[in-house]
Image (tube, rainbow, N blue to C red; front, side, top):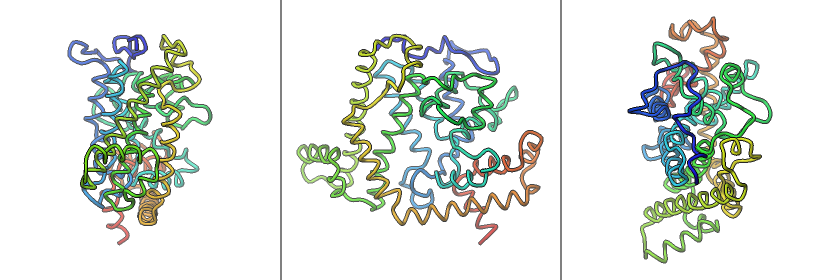
Length: 375
């Protein structure tokens, strides 16, 4: 693939607040990546839920381990496609920063509470974090990332077609992110890397949690073919090693499929400029139809057997209740918030401040606060 389809840090559209770039030692995209890694929000991902509640086991993936796995896959695909690895990695590292405690159930609880105050959306919250809530620099709020990183983070799931979340809408007024056009190929890679990671690693966690077994995986044609190949090559493997080899082989298969399909899509549609990428009607980074069907089958299997498993549903309902009660408590007792949070009252509503405060908690801290107040 020609380099002209890769995002070039030397041609970056820059940052909202001008800075002198140290291109000799680090490119602008490398600096973006490093800023994300050193942010408070990134560290907190260590104690935020991916699928299994963080306190259940030290083995299961958290938002942080999931994020690192996504970034590794994203960087690998970018390297093969000759795209900018640093940008692909930065977008992947940032994509889940806005998740509140307890994963999507925490998001649902906050969205209900914020129904009349702009709602809550984890992608929108990510932008709030990296453009406002992080306080690490004397010259500006947030991380002051490059336009290319921000554009990829905001649109990694695709261009906007309908309603735009509040923070993204307001930020776009002062730093136009071309919301109605496709993002860079690096952002598209980060998006599909997320799919690869959770489709495979949630299988691994679910097996070790004894929610699924190998016989069930053999009922999925995609996994059955891989398991047959592994069993043909290695005799009498320990089941835990078998699952690890299954996940590893599956990820490799998916990456190879995506690279092949993406190269063909670009070649067949004569894509030869950044403008061609942004104006194309859909993502160019994609799976083959066969793999897409298999991926959808895996997602259905995970929803039926893992995400909607009665044990997980019960824990998630409890977590949603905890966050809902915490919101009510701080909304009713706003003055007990730390001063640096209360002092934002001239900038936003009380409800948004409470929402930001709770969204920034880890699972463990939210649980401790709940137990201190209600148990």
